Image (cartoon, rainbow, N blue to C red; front, side):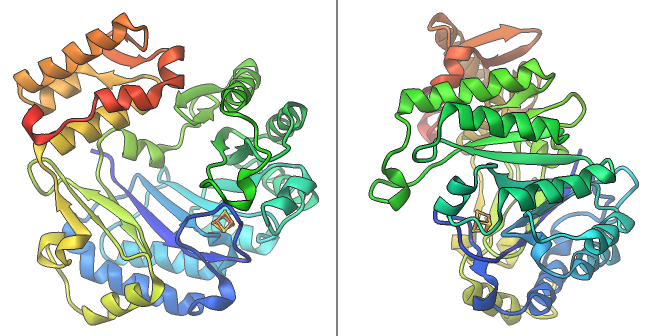
Length: 390
Ligand code: SF4
């Protein structure tokens, strides 16, 4: 069984207008060393939820983890090790970095301490669009950051934001072209999502144009050897995100820090638990349990911060996460995890969806067709189960 840890670092230089992650402008939140102290306390409180083991992945996300001093990132890796969650030479350790928040010295500290994958939140190389969404960096700074990563021949992933107001197809193609030329091994295109009435909701490409934009990105990437391995992730062979795969293949993961969500297999159908998303309340809760250790979320957290899954919820999660992957749902895994009448029910739904050409069946896997990809929300709706369904 693979296992990984996510660490949320909620600091940003400034807030981007479209962002709904739990993050703060760095001056509006406690200093990073104090936040990391809270993470240490959280590690102590929750380490017994999981057996000590060497980690397959660690992922520092945010926020902008590269904004805080690099020695604090190292201290978190070491603290996990102190509680038996050690790293190996092949542990994938990813850090999200934003252009203009990293330099040679910081990079050296990361590399000397096992960080081996970088996720660059650059979004576009168009300065006009960067300004529009209040990103704090320029295209020039992104290129400088990528130069630094390339100098060391590093494995990095690149996020591309599309469907922005007034964004053109040519501009988007240019973003993809530069990201590939710069050596990205993994590219995640994200469609801008903002509610109606949001300043960025005006002048956006229509829904059909958004689908077309995604197709253009997919075509450009596949022509250059990238494979779409998940609904919104592409990678060169061998460079898929091992950490994100944990979320999609029903493996447990432990997440630390503000607003983070975790999954453990301590109960029959799995347990989900999560942290508060307001920094003051998060801090209060961690301090309230200072020095204590707990064996499970149910013995530690209030009822509104964990859920012991029932079979129908586990089945829905299993179907949704596996169908996000292009390799699809593994029939043997489904039959292994759920009783026969339940797996038969899922297979009959999939057979019905095949008649609509939304899914296909091959070598023991069911996966989305091109049409199913566009209509994936409807496929997921069909594969959502209530307690009376199972
Ligand atoms: S830098 Fe990233 S996490 Fe921070 S506000 Fe912008 S989009 Fe959100």
